[in-house]
Structures are given as C-alpha cells and as structure tokens.
Image 1 (cartoon, rainbow, N blue to C red):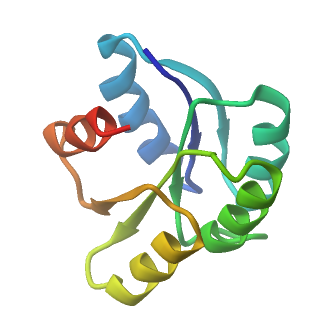
Image 2 (cartoon, one colour; image 1 turned 90 degrees about the vertical axis):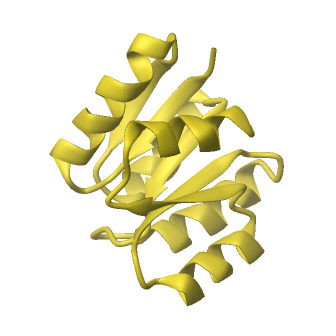
Length: 117
C-alpha cells in the first residue's frame, strides 16, 4: 500500500480521507493545512502519493504542486477541488498532477483514483 501525504486546510477533510484510506492499508505519513507546509513535509517524508486541495492559505495547491514537481518530477500528486473549477484542474494537470478528485467526494471515487496510481 502507499505512503500518503494529506494536504487540505480543512481538518475535517483530512480526517475524512484518513478514515477512508487507513482501513485499506494505506499509511498517512503526514498532514499539512497549507501549501508551504506541504512542500516542507514532502521533502522530509518523501511520500508515494500526495492528495492536495487547491484552495489553501499561504501557498495554494497549484503553487505547492509547482514546487513539489521541481523537487521530484516523478511525484504523484492528486489534486482535490470543488466542482466547477475545470480550468484550474486543467492547469494542475499541465503542471504535473496525475489526477484529480472533485468535492464533494465519496469513498468509491477516492479509491478508484488511487487504483490508477
């Protein structure tokens, strides 16, 4: 299973993802509430996968994605965004995101995206 870094400014979203992923055998190696902390944690814990919100304080998800891809061009980052943000999702894919999950999401959707990684 995968070592995963969760990045979302909403604690309840990180908690919901943790509740979905840990029973499947995935290991949550870190959590961050903003893009700056996400980049720093990425350097330190070297996760197999990052699940990251786009809209966050300090450094948003797209900015953090750019920095993560400069650190490791093979990083697997899945962006999480609200519905109706298609242009931002496209930009994330162009920046190197390997996939996206649209909020609100259900467990089945999250697991389906993870299976592709």
